[in-house]
Image 1 (cartoon, one colour):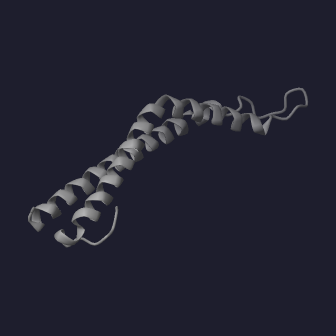
Image 2: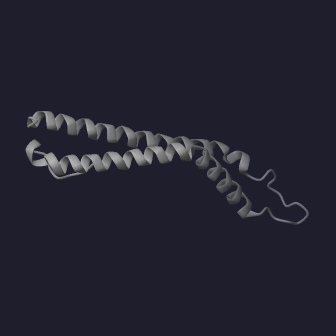
Image 3: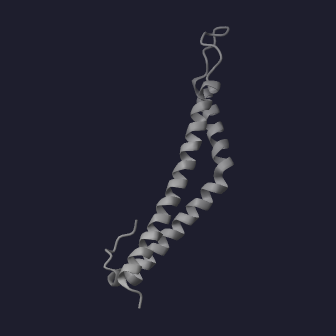
Length: 112
């Protein structure tokens, strides 16, 4: 039988690994946001006046923005999916650990 302090240490390490993976996933999201924000000036229309009586198409900016955001997200999709799978596995491992050893370690029945 594993002593209670060792069980608490193991659970603490598992939760820290989970937090680290979540931070990595958040960092990827922030990087995508930063890159698309930096691209916004290039996506805006070139002229602010009417050209031959035609107003600028307001939907064109959103279309270009969405296309660029989709391209950036697609570029990072394998990394996002891998981190998401890792996060789900860690959550399941923590839940199983608590289910098996929660009472022995004096841990509340709480998943991160």
